Image (cartoon, rainbow, N blue to C red; front, side, top):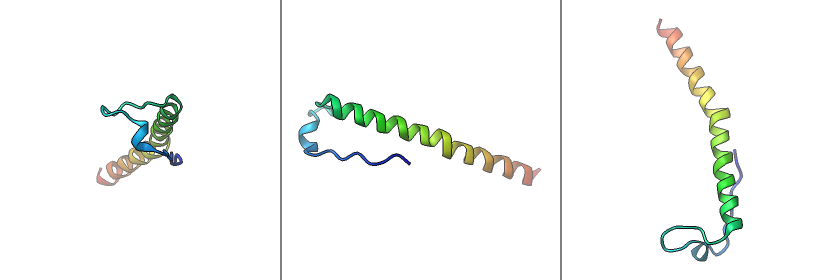
Length: 60
């Protein structure tokens, strides 16, 4: 599972419309999102597919 990202002064890091004001922080957050998606694709999706196959086999 991806590690957390700590944002010091979070109230100053984002504009009123939610855009990130710090390029380094934005890069870090985008990296976190990418790692989270990779985790889902590599760990969660195969388990769901395997469970579905087992249920289909048990039902059929």
